[in-house]
Image 1 (tube, rainbow, N blue to C red):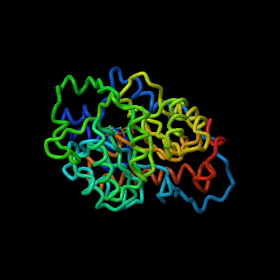
Image 2 (image 1 turned 90 degrees about the horizontal axis):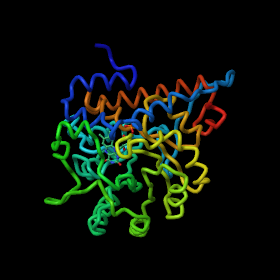
Image 3 (image 1 turned 90 degrees about the vertical axis):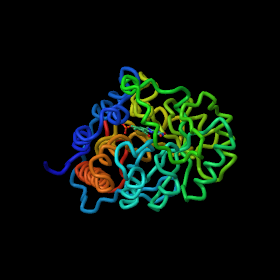
Image 4 (image 1 turned 120 degrees about the vertical axis):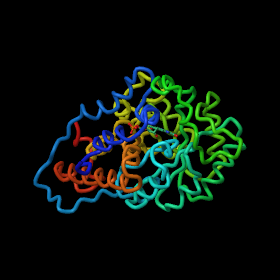
Length: 339
Ligand SMILES: Cc1cc2nc3c(=O)[nH]c(=O)nc-3n(C[C@H](O)[C@H](O)[C@H](O)COP(=O)(O)O)c2cc1C
């Protein structure tokens, strides 16, 4: 079997090695998985407008995310329970990201503690599932600050538990087996009907870390996010895993960018599978894209080395598409690049 040449190759291989329930949890979306499919399809509908004769000898993919220098406008999205996919779990992913200077976002529901993950010492943010008890949330925030996480990514699209039917059919409970950030006897809940803008205000007032709101899908909420002090708005439908029939993230990106009006950075995830996808999103106003499932497929295939390979492939694809598009730096990627 030859080495993977693109992210789809990792996916095919991972499905051969993972058990049925791990696969269902990784691959699955909510209900009819309409949104799950739409995320990728939306990227595939866009076309790039190549400009030629522009000397692309030196391509610079670097950028800054909330001030942090990163190698490319592609980061690793937060994902729970990585031990389901490989015994080296989150620390392996975080080390691969650090190796390439890529932003890594650690999930509240990681299999390992955030302190263990932070040992990778790369650019890192902490994804926060705010809890009903402010004291529990506060303790997580204090630990994230102490462990050198540079921002809090508060996930706001989990007001109700997901209806992922692949998981339900397998009546899977072992997805919840390994959990690294809970105190003994404590359960950190993702589904959070109690989430409000008022709670976001309390989180903001309790820390000096910049706040990112992940799971914004409308211009209205993007404007509210900026009003409530968010430093960045992260367009996401949770990879099609929460509200089925939500639009593709790429389809709402421009609406969100317009509503934010430069008042915050904008990121997007969902269906990013190629370096060119990052270019499309940046052209439409995103500062960066984040990748979820493909990183986990790569982890399942080869642990840290698998994720290093996946990130290298994304970097190579990004450079190649930038050169053929006639843009030398991320700042050169503009609205005219995409139709
Ligand atoms: C297995 C899995 C676990 C996830 N766990 C979390 C999580 O703990 N917190 C969170 O904010 N998002 C979580 N997400 C959503 C991702 O951060 C991201 O929004 C999504 O995967 C992006 O879509 P993509 O998989 O098409 O790249 C998870 C996604 C997957 C596939």
